[in-house]
Image 1 (tube, rainbow, N blue to C red):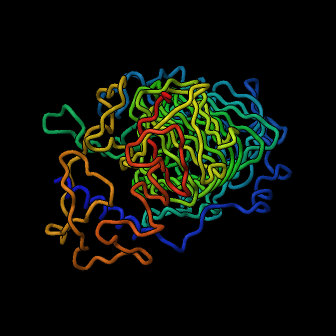
Image 2 (image 1 turned 180 degrees about the vertical axis):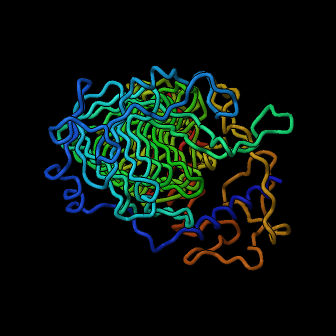
Image 3 (image 1 turned 60 degrees about the vertical axis):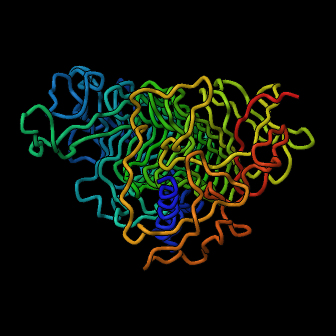
Length: 555
């Protein structure tokens, strides 16, 4: 059965590669286009204040036909509702008086809007109408121009209805979101603070179907569910230069229901759950082309990845520093379909290792023997003793991913403060979609959290037609199968299945020269001599590198 599971993973990888659409382009906004769209000169000026909101210097309207108007009708999860209303609990619910104290600033027409000032109980809501999703002109450019917005019952900023440039009919790791209807620009030289809550799932009233005994909901359609402090129901772009966006989230931080592309800006997120999340299973793409992201999952909800994509996560540039929840099995970077690191700098810490499918950037994965305390500084030094990469994870962790242009082929030492570390060569057994790899033991001193969502072992999928009698490949030379797993024999593809163009099956179970390793990227298992040998020298090869049993070096 172990050999069969091995084959199913191979098949899944091949299938995912065949789904990728090579003709798409990444969602990078050209500098001149970005500058034009984010220009403040012709923008509608919205000045927030608890004493009165103005639009282009005049008191804001309460007329719902205006391009900008205010109301006290925020969407929230109310107290006193039973299980037929939605999935919320007492923790998710709010009193009507709290909700009514919030002022919603509605934007209802396409255009560019600059938001500044402070609103201590309020929300910015962009809603261009039910037909906007299919209208390419239904585009709003929201300039965060020194805004401070707090909402205690729902997201502080939410895009309801704008143009959706993406589709759920195609699955690819590369998407073009330049035409998206939701665009956020962080104005240069400004600091913006978004402090927000969330809305638990509320059912459409006429769609609720109860079980026979009437004690539970068997089926229901969603009316509302907004998990993040900064939320978009449609694909969204975020851009900027040196402007800062601070997001303090009770639940998740920055979410999009389909695609999210970050092209620039300084974004700091503290969240009770996932720092960034894109929601569409097997479809969503989180693309990072630039900017500086610093994400700390504080863990009030008991879980949370740094970045979580229900489809792909593609990092092409910028700096990404994440620290997952320290009391759950969550990852610094997580995706269901694959992580691609093509450029930029990544420093991701967590208690789960998710699959890195590939990319052009050299990276190293470190698995520690014990849970590491947050707040300590970890540094890679080159052969001359110079600091090359340094990170201080905010939370406790067991896995650390480092990637960047600074990490070139050569010998390094690895330090925690003044303590030199050592390791043995390891393997890239990152679990698909954040799942714990089978037969994997937790490091000493770390216990598996109880009743964690997503931690249960999934049911074994049925064997695809044509694979029942499939022969198994040999293990790569020098690699020993896990205890209880038989070495697979030579593999042949099932009838009718073709290998993706440019890819060859390994002969006798050996990977072709220059091919991909089990972690999905080019490179090595951490070149430290013989497999399992402990050394204080960390030799990095171009591509993927894995180091296990990382602990203090004992001379």
